[in-house]
Length: 326
Length: 224
Image 1 (cartoon, each protein chain N blue to C red):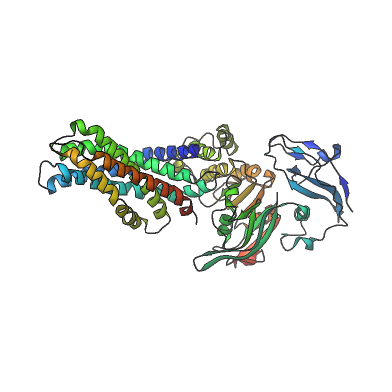
Image 2 (cartoon, one colour):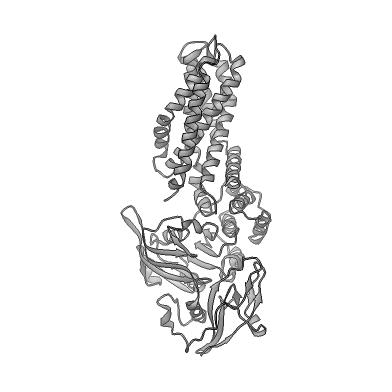
């Protein structure tokens, strides 16, 4: 049984609201990421018990923190939930129901989806690259896409980014029906793929400056992102003179420059040393509070990061696990 | 759209200034062809229709090199993806690429036209220089508009080195006729503008048609 608590919180642009605010404030806040205690949206929240764990239940209307001086207020009546949700209610997307983190993803079940795929298909000529892909990713959740080489992971990311047209089924990303409403997506997606999307002859600063102009982002943000990825001291070196790890850090800065609500990450730790990977964690990791689709061959790491998982074999859904690589 | 086009153009010029791939290659090609004509025709000077033809055919062939390289950075370094992920009107890419090619052609002609005058031209340009500048500007605009379109088409194909000349040169025939005919009287001994307005009008019409056509279809070329 849920005992709804509500809180009213004012959020400045980019501000995160801690779940602790619930205790003091008398109105409503939605907690998207239970573990990181980050609030990014409006909704109803209640506490309920699930075994030994206390679970935050949320009913969310998306309200991205990027909105200037977003007023978070009660827009929905408190949600009454009869008893604990069963893990089975979450379909087959829960990675490991025994892990507390993944049990917390139960809270996502009531949230506004950021990605909804239903029977998605994509072909290259006669070759079927993706078929029958159905998954729903709530806002703020992380989906790990797993599979061997050529399974269709990168194709899926490119479809979600609006770079490839789906050929069948339905795909809805951040409220944009693809491909019909693809025009709504640019500027909302941060794409970190195999290619860094950086020009080798230009410096890191010039590359980010170029992308900042394309996205209409203030030039100061370039310096901020260079510092955030610790590339400010090599910012004026041509990209061709940088190591793979440095280029990957710049690529992450490029993907985050416009503060996108959705991150599509294809092997984001490729080429990074442990220190650099740790440094990027607040930007592209769970702490970022963004919706993420994560592709990695590091199965353990991907599953530890994920709320949901999707296995792919030959472009078709398959149980997520090590058998995908056999 | 203008801001994005300016950003793309600035980036293209920066890359060209650092790599020195397109303009030096186009210039060297042009100079080499003029030297070949100088010796191949076994004549010290050319004038009239022959001079005009040599000038323009050489410039158009040099343009093929520039068009082939126009999307090289985008193709090889994922620049098109970067553009498609940004909230930018795709027309900005066409405008920027056409503007870059226009600038590259102007840079080539800064060297090529004086070299042509020195190596091949008998009468000298003299008072006809302003008219030649107008013809070059309109010719470059047409090449740039069509070149950006063809470069975008070729960028998505495997045989792009073949596609560019096979598509570009036939479509440039009307422009070649207009440019050569407009230039021919300027390169005669008794030269003076003859029917210049008519040929400039045709060039302008060609430019308008290909700019409009390119703007209309460019969006679809970037679809997968």
